[in-house]
Amino acid sequence: MTHALALPIPSAIGNIDAYIQVANRYPMLAEAEEIRLAERFHNEGDVEAARQLVLSHLRLVISIARGYLGYGLPHADLIQEGNIGLMKAVKRFDPARGVRLVSFAMHWIKAEIHEYILKNWRLVKVATTKAQRKLFFNLRSLKSDYEGVDTLSGPQAAEVAARLGVKQDEVVEMETRLSGRDIALEGNPDDGDEAFAPIDYLADSRYEPTRVLENKAVARLHDEGLREALSVLDPRSRRIVEARWLPEGEAATLHDLAAEFDVSAERIRQIEVKALQKMRDALTEA
Image 1 (cartoon, rainbow, N blue to C red):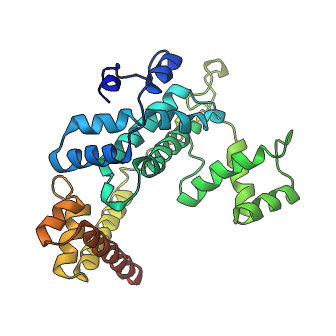
Image 2: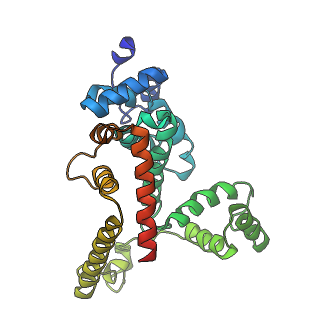
């Protein structure tokens, strides 16, 4: 492991081939070493341990990012966003759950890349809900099966809807969003003084008085709902949820709470899962 750490830390800014070459020289960690480093980071705050975990998984980010090159965005940018997801995964990784970091990190890496693609695909977002985001990526992938087809026909849209388990109308709507073209906000200077560009009529309504009051009301309802959901928990469960999900400072680890309550980390995890489900049920009823 020592010789690997002597390598320079790669940067995705610049020569992407050189970056990939350096990143691939970092060996993957054995499970025992991975657990040791993760425990050092979470229990002792050892940043060097976190660094080793990140460096050993850079090749995973490169591999995942390569699968999104079809969206017309630079490979280096996709890797940079994926690396942010990897760092988030390392911060949240708990080896006590019995899952390897490579499996745990895939979700966070893909989530950051998805978010980046959606933000840069168009000025007007094509997908805002979780279901729409899933359809956005799956539809682009499945459309490649219909070579030479720019727009799905009725039967093709129905077939895709059946394969994705969604309504045909949702497929048609998403395809319409994908095929829409971008419009320049400020228009073309050559259009003359009579031109009316979107910048002239698109207003920022965030600070409109009614919207401000509405946002405050929603925030108040969220706070009240959270307090009500926490109130259904017993003291130990509430302490675990607040320490893990609502900390004033650094979130507590399973091991921290295991030591506090003199039980195993797995027992803390079980209590946490049940408590969160109980809170969800309370919020649903509310």
